[in-house]
Image 1 (cartoon, rainbow, N blue to C red):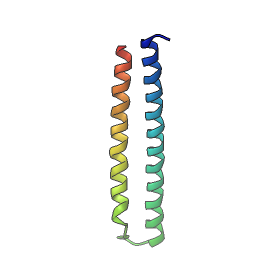
Image 2: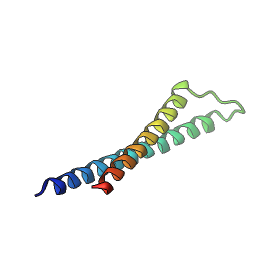
Image 3: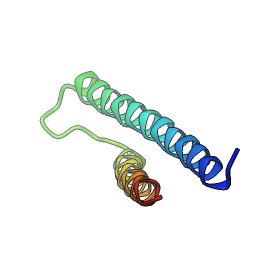
Length: 82
């Protein structure tokens, strides 16, 4: 296998890994939303209490999704230039 073909194969594998990471992070974000709705529904108040960690986790997952999208763009751009 040529060096260039091997690089393409490795970049394809890297992009697949980033895609898997994005899928897991998106699923975690959806589950976090479900948890938020369950807490609000259970309390049935106008101003429900939500743990501060819930907002922090949501923000961290959004940041992770942004970083994974940027990584995918970078790897894809590099791969297309090869």
